[in-house]
Amino acid sequence: MKSNIRLLGCAVFVATLLPLSAGAQAVRVGAPAPAFTATDSRGQSETLAQYRGKYVVLEWHNQNCPFTRKHYVSGNMQALQRQWTARGVIWLTVISSAPGNDGYVTAAEENDYLARMHAVPTAVLLDADGNLGRLYNAKTTPAMYVIDPQGKLIYEGAIDDRRTVEQVDVQGARNYVSAALTEAMAGKPVATPYTRSYGCSVKYKGTD
Image (cartoon, one colour):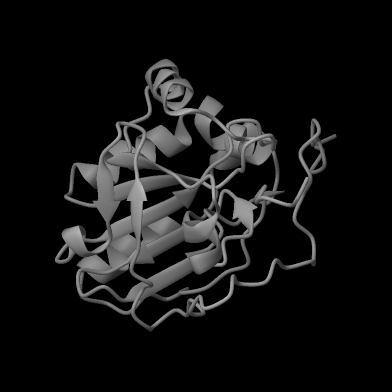
């Protein structure tokens, strides 16, 4: 029997939403994506503005979350990263876990993880203060966002339609990120621009 609640100490997001930080603009599909500056795991500064003219994927991540592990241990997330970065898409993994909270990693720890998992995002943004996560109102790991070359948010939500921790469920799932990119690159409107994300709650400062 499949279990959708194999949590291994990782709290699942249910209904309680974290408020946006003071002064943060609400993120909304169809509107300009909020601008940001963040430092990546290589110590480089990354901004949304520098990728103007390209599609950008934001992927919220927690190594310890079983929902995240589903997509990494199966190789699904890495395959998506390779597929879309090969087509010029910028893929930014974001870690918003605060120091002392589940999922927090140092730059060295994250770079080691990338090597072990053969992950190939464009960069990993270390967001320990949670500013970027709250700017986008990211609630879960994983949570996915797609931004078009004009800087407009065209998809927000879950990675796919299989809300489980079972690796086998990757097969046959409808991947909303791939669908959004495929449709947008073909000049078509995104058929499903918003879904409710699923996974572990993002471990912002002040949360467990």
